[in-house]
Length: 103
Image: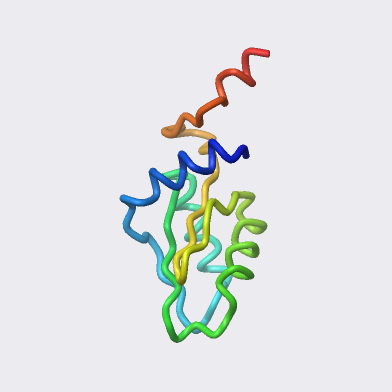
């Protein structure tokens, strides 16, 4: 992902409300499954990590990205933004993506 694409996704994520919350149970298989489903439906999601979660937010973001084959767009405070292109419902067109496909 290029810096231009990341900036574009960050601008889209600003208006998003968190779709999931992660508490003190941290990243369970159920949370991973929920993130995977949300990514397939929306492509870009925001996750809120509650204050009672002792795990590091950056580590959780990397773990979720790895388990769901997505990319971490940004981590700000206790919020994680993830992106993965949907295989069935493509909604977001990244800048520069069309040029790469034409080559």
